[in-house]
Length: 305
Image 1 (cartoon, rainbow, N blue to C red):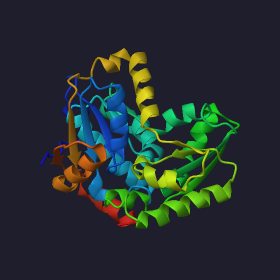
Image 2 (spheres, rainbow, N blue to C red; image 1 turned 90 degrees about the horizontal axis):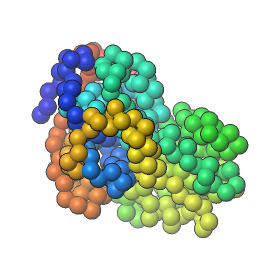
Image 3 (cartoon, rainbow, N blue to C red; image 1 turned 30 degrees about the horizontal axis):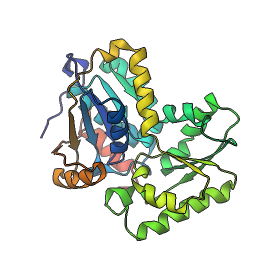
Image 4 (cartoon, rainbow, N blue to C red; image 1 turned 30 degrees about the vertical axis):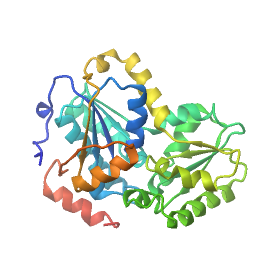
């Protein structure tokens, strides 16, 4: 068990370290896989907050608090750069962490999200400017994709559809079950009922590629499905080329370590299935940065617990 240190930027190691990847659960493994395929030379540290997944239905304040706890943990373990491999965290917490926490913690460290890389490229994929978004309730409601896409492609029509139960299907290893057909088909049908002209669908949750066989089964022929892994990886590669001061602080050993807030054996078994390789995992706790009262406040206002 790794203990938290008091809040303050003197607690973070100043030596080069791994790239951190954070997600509320298993979904970020799809982002990590894409990054490792393109950038295998770096060291990586993955953290899944499986014990508190899913993040999608949670309030902005709770997602922000949970995400900053995770980023703080990864920084304290030596990461100089953290990727929020979670769309809900990217939508609800990224900007606040960048603007409020990084200046106080360590201005030299970086936190990046997964929404912008997809938004930048989507206009080159759609043929008719009708784009669908399958995501968590929190991501759809935040309209983060609409805002980011319209910065680059103002003529694209974005239609979002929340997909309750998709994340639990993955987290509880039900992605391949016959029962998953109902939930996947229902949400795809609802999306296409909103806009029958959609020709491109963004999987706006990093868990969703783990449902890809079901998604392809119920998506009409000719509609392009866009997972995020390869685009996040390409964006990160370009970012590191443009920011050598960040790249120089990253270690290169080709290693990866896995951390989870849930039972490490459960994470190991499930992640090994998703990654098609055997892994080891370590259990960690994520605790409030300013004391137990903040944790109680979060629980009081979080209606999903």
